[in-house]
Image 1 (cartoon, helix red, strand yellow):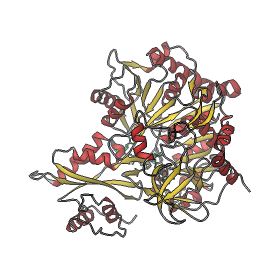
Image 2 (cartoon, protein in one colour):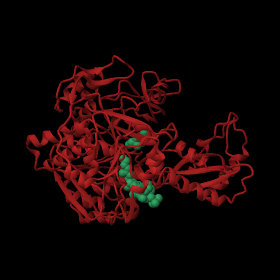
Image 3 (tube, helix red, strand yellow):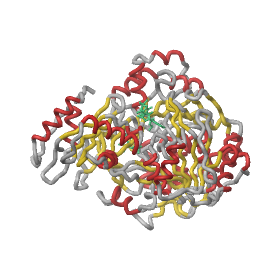
Image 4 (cartoon, helix red, strand yellow):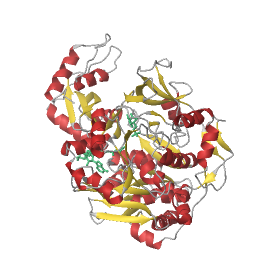
Amino acid sequence: MGQYLDQYKLSLEQPEKFWATAADSIDWTKKWDRVLDDSNAPIYRWFTGGKLNTCYNALDRHVLNGRANQAALIYDSPVSNTKKTYNYQELLEKVSRLAGVLTDLGVEKGDRVLIYMPMIPEGVMAMLACARIGAVHSVVFGGFAANELATRIDDAKPKVILSASCGLEGSRVIEYKPLLDGAIELSNHQPSNTVILQRPQAKASLKKGRDIDWASAMTDALVTDCVTVEATDPLYILYTSGTTGQPKGVVRDNGGHAVAMMWTMKNLYNIKPGEVFWAASDIGWVVGHSYICYGPLLNGSTTVMYEGKPVGTPDPGAFWRVISEHKVAAMFTAPTALRAIRKEDPDCEHIKQYDLSSMRALFLAGERCDPDTLYWAKDKIQVPVVDHWWQTETGWAIAANCLGLEEFPVKAGSPTKPVPGYEIHFLDDAGQAVPKGEMGAIAIKLPLPPGTFPTLWQNEKRFFTSYLETFEGYYETGDAGYQDEEGYVYIMGRTDDVINVAGHRLSTGAMEEVIASHPDVAECAVIGVADKLKGQSPIGFAVLQAGANRNEDEVSQELIALIREKIGPVAAFKIATVVKRLPKTRSGKILRGTMRSMADGVDYNIPATIDDPVSLDEIVENLKTLGYPKSV
Ligand code: COA
Ligand code: AMP
């Protein structure tokens, strides 16, 4: 009999006892006054009165406790042909100096610093340097375009931006500096300085007085010590897609986050200090924050930063090479990456060249793992394949097979059971529990556990309206699914306009706003359709302005280019089509769900309230021309 049930019950029945015990794994400058502060419910805070420094816990204490020479970060970059290992002492020295660079530029506790970096060690150093001086970092994913970057600059108002001259996408060099310059030009807020790391693959031109060369700044800077912060002070802001073009600034605090990260490394991932953990994600996503940077380092483990793709850098054996070369104990990736490998190497021939004996488990998240991919991975890799469900907002898993507590049999299509700390409910529109086995909106009873977001950056109103209003006393996840008789949960899709493309969370609402800005477009709809490789991919439908005498194919191409320019290549928006009208209800609601079912080739009902049933025929026709429905 494992520990899961006891721990799960304890976490819900006596959360203060449960989390106070977990908090012993962190070095505090001052212990908290209250474990759970409910004085301002439904806004809850954890460990109020407690003081600590996250960077101290991630680096300094390990150096002091005998891990100075242990590998902290392994950088493996097939795209730049580089491999480099930093031990804890070396990483601490780099981070302390970078903290000095920021201090020299006037960055103080509470100031924001934006990080727009590729997958290089300096990205993690930048995050930790901010944490060291109590500055709040906001990392922006490199695949976002200048416009998206500008939105985040205006919201976070960073004093300084840390960036690099370029990112490497396979064999392509993506220059970051023109994107950054463009974003600063577009934004109202102006950072005082940028610090630019010059990579050998591209040289960025620096603007005198504003842009500073990273390498020379590091030479001049002094090593800088940790600043003590409140447990409830923000550690970072991470923007994520909502239903509109304005992204949500998810806030993470210091104390609860550190405690939750430590708890998951042991109890969920079952990783000990000194072992190697590899999250093949990007520091621009929450997975990168939690499990490339903070989780493994807080735990005294070794983290791997991989700058490459699952395929093409150079072949579909890349993941297996990294696992064997760095003796990875557990790996984390998105199902889409496995589908990409399987597509190129269906029999997984490449794996035969490598010794994967170090590997104990493979963790998947970011999108629903289809059973086919799960079976394939289990068969080829021969270790437990653990799907787990979480969100940027929570920062760590809501449902999982907690290997450190008790390993449950895997059921394909399910991320297993609620993780301690989370009381998951499946509700109907009226907020009533649906029977076991029936689909409902997934809500989590408040309070959310430590490490989850306490609010949205300077937008408490949106925090309430987006998450707390629909079901009183609950956090609305935006996901729908069901629970079976044995308590396994199944996450089946979103209840809002968020789609998941290649494990990247994107807003169809944001894409619609961009398409609607085209001068010839009167109205539009973007839907996410099933995609064999990427899970979902977006398709745009546009109605042209009356009198716009335009070639439809040309307009479609312009719309594709516009989304790439305004949102970025990561939107993977490759299909647009022009229609005469969009199917709507009589009250004017676009029937996106019906359109999606048509594209996916699944059964659909035509609502009785449809305004003009003929409009559906044109959608079917256009989809057919585009090759939909496909057999997925
Ligand atoms: N900087 C600049 N451009 C980027 C980028 C970055 N950091 N990341 C992606 N892009 C670009 C890609 O080059 C591509 O451009 P293209 O349209 O010119 O080809 C576009 O954005 C779409 O990227 P992506 O969706 O990643 O597609 P892909 O075909 O390059 O790769 C996969 C497909 C499945 C291999 C890849 O998406 C993958 O590894 N996904 C896993 C994602 C993941 O781990 N997510 C973690 C969240 S848990
Ligand atoms: P993000 O905030 O980018 O991590 O995306 C979170 C969303 O991705 C969730 O709300 C889900 O819709 C989806 N998601 C993440 N992990 C899973 C999973 N294991 N199974 C199903 N959906 C998932």
